[in-house]
Structures are given as structure tokens and as C-alpha cells.
Image (cartoon, rainbow, N blue to C red):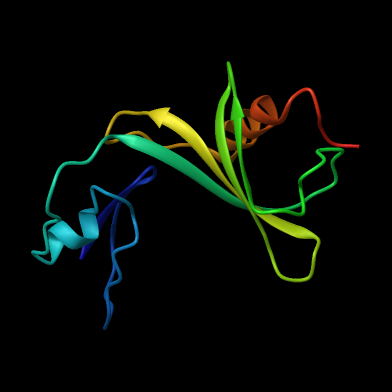
Amino acid sequence: MTLNTPNGEKTVRAKYVVGCDGAHSVVRQSIGRVSQGHGEDKAWGVMDVLAVTDFPDIRFKCTIQSAEAGNILLIPREGGYMVRLYVDMGNIAPDAWLTKEQVLEKAQAVLAPTGSK
């Protein structure tokens, strides 16, 4: 299989292929499995972080909605220190690539005025 990456094309040989690249999965399309229905070009940045913050509900499963900055779905991880953030990055171009810095910046904007200690 040939993959298009930010650094150009890369050929990969594999015994198994798993499609976990979102609603417009190139992996699924490559193996002939096209999804049914209509999707949006909406992106979610997902990150597991060690939460050092004064956000009051950081240890609880919750949704965070900011009037100006967007949304986050927060899921506490095992052990009580890590959390998984699903950061709504909004509508993007189908071929866009997000950086970890963009996702982190968006998460910090949603969580403002609380923040890291």
C-alpha cells in the first residue's frame, strides 16, 4: 500500500490493515470498504495528557463548551492522573493535517480562564 504523508509518499507492506482515520477513511477506501451516509470534514484532535490544572472537573467525564473557543470531550484515564481530551477542531479541508501544537493551543483556549499551574 502507498501512503501519502506530510513528508511524501511511503510504501508499506502489512499483513493486516486497520481503518481508524476518521469518517473519510483512506484506508477503508483503499480496501474497497466505503462508508455509508454523509459525513462532514470536521476534525477532532485527541490527546492523552497529564493534567496539571485548576479546572474543577478535570477528574470527571464531561463536555466543556466555550462560547468563543469551541468544545472538548474530557475522559479521565486509568490511575487518576491522565485525561484524554477530544478537542473539536471545527471544519477543515479533507486533506488538511493538524499539528499537536494546534490541538494543544485550541484545548488551552477552550479551558481558559482556567489553566495549567
